[in-house]
Image (cartoon, rainbow, N blue to C red):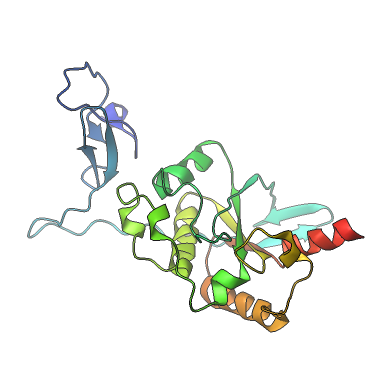
Length: 239
């Protein structure tokens, strides 16, 4: 029964250690989700990546993400005509010198998104940097992606990983605000005095936003953009 199955990315059994386990051993959504026991201490319901047997029907496609029409009325935000309250988190990492979203070295991406969904968050702000978006020599640090928990993300470029996070967030009911947070991947506040410097003139900032617009403007989960957060913060602190 549905009550006797383990949820996605939940524990679903033990190995051969002899420890008692009384929970479900079949994953909800089987056969698309299967229980993998990789040691006597760890088990988890994960997506089934095994090829389908000959003649088996293909798995059903994911349902399309519904379009949301946002507008304002006075001090209220409306989504499809109903009042909408944003409950969001900042998720750093894309703007750093590694270019990898925080946490992917430890947990599956869907597990992290499921945590936000389970705790009734509905939005994620993703800080980015101009250098990581437009510098052709930038290479994301693959070692910061756990090769077991996120094997399906290995080999993606920085922008492809941004695309994947936005797409998966939509499947968890999470909206995305893109924030070109700083010019460079470094944490030196001196680089954030303005929205341009000698290395990254204003044209590079515009190029970064054009790149994001071309890739993300039609994404169902994309609902907001923040021009240059850290730069304006620095100006306010100096005022």
